[in-house]
Amino acid sequence: MRPPLVLASASPQRRAILQTLNVDFTVRPSGVQEREQGPGPEVALENALAKAQAAVEEQAFEAVLGVDTIVERDGVLYGKPADESAARATLAALGGATHTVHSGVALLLPDRRLTAVASTAVTFREIDETLMERCLRSGEWRDRSGAYAIQGMGLALVRSVEGDYQNVVGLPVATLIDLWPALLDG
Image (cartoon, rainbow, N blue to C red; front, side):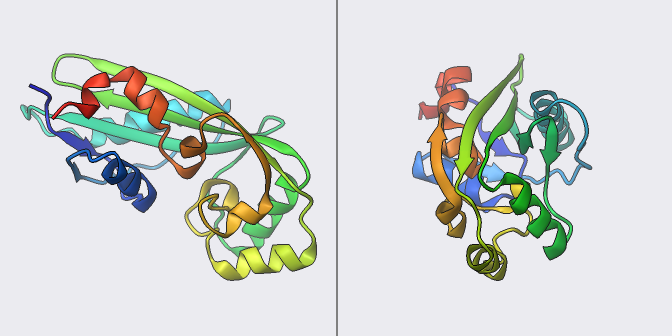
């Protein structure tokens, strides 16, 4: 029997993806302080593991899923911008270039711990002032690594995606299913 899934995240995107997969789960945000320095894959995985561990309830028969997504370009990490000015600087840095979206996935099961990192290359078009203003006005930059939502207005920024699109949204489905095929049981 598959243990019940607990999503250690308040992300509406992650919830929506799991709902699309018809997976039953509960939400238990962890509220941990996220690391923002270091190699992207390592930071994403460490943050995902910290989120999952903080959401574990002792003696509970459950699977706790922690996920963290971070954007990296040329060794620089772009997390969630603090304000509109930081969002503008992030989008300007990503414009006309390719960046990598890394998602760390940590699944804590009653009898083992499963972890993985998914990486997706995203190439942005040049961002002129009109497009920049439109993206900033949308407010989608709030609480988003890289200051954009690919499933929203951020789609106008994208020239191409190489890899798992859902990873860029916030939950690398293929990686999660490869890690834990039982996710789709029941």
